[in-house]
Length: 455
Image: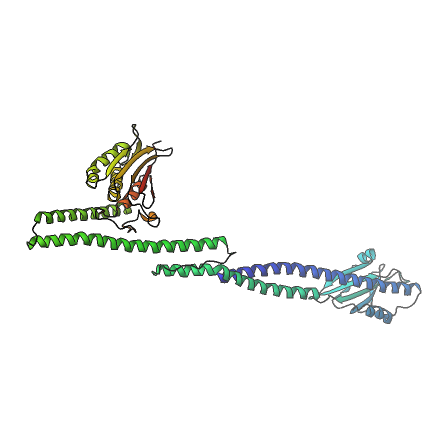
């Protein structure tokens, strides 16, 4: 990227300089040609004026005097030719300048304009007609020739030096810009490779102030992705540890009581059987919830939508768990308006959501749980409120994660799979609803589920 940027930047500058230089040199060459022609025309007119004076005084033409005039004017080459319009005879008194042939002189145009000019082989020539005729009616014509000024004059040399300096400066600036722009991309690629190799702690350094917004967004996105990956790795590790612990605990109890029954080491086999039954049910629930989450993740489950009364399902779910709540000395109250509140959803899945919320509340409530269903402007809200210990601010964002271990140490009665709220969130999201949680440490917790209204 850096190399391409430098080449592109320098290429643009070089092309621009070439275009500007070409135009400058062409214009300068034209100006030099015109300037040289003007000087030669002035010199030629001075020479023809001298010729006119000589002709007027009837003095012979002096080549030495003509040469003196041309040398004073710094003209390299000159020539004199006599042209008789009547006989169209041409007499060369002095050799014409190099490259100028008599056939190139159009004497009719010369007689009309008084002078001719042209360029040939890098030289400028001018032919001027004397004002006075000779006795035989012939004209004296002076032909002067000189070279252009130096092709690379002072201005051209300065332009060349400036162009070289501009190209060098462009290369330096392009290299600096390329390094500045490519460094974040190189760092991002290196960090991405580190993440791919398993180093989830890799991060991109923050850019200094004044960096481009796009580059800052790229670094922020990669760092956010790395943090999410690192957290996902931690959640996965915690999930495996939690599942291992939740499986090992009931298995240890089952194994211990089973060995006691076999060895006839227990005085109460019925109690041992009840413990084995309870722990096996706990295992069954944990495995069932794991399978449920696996199906939800893979989207290998179906939702049978129908129009249902949320109040009716809420009351039935509460009635099925009222006995469990009473055993924990928890009062379960259902609050709802008298008229039905209809939503579109899967009745079995919604019943599962409500049951999971109530079971979670029963494990943590002290004395009371309120299941409330009400209508909102933008949906139907179902909320479960308990008067338990509440959830800390640190734990609150993670309660819907699988098997998240909170700072609150659970009591013995708080035995569950640790997956209930994760299943709730997955099911509610699949049915187009949303889940919200509000809690203050020491004041209980409220979990709200909002379903869209029927249009």
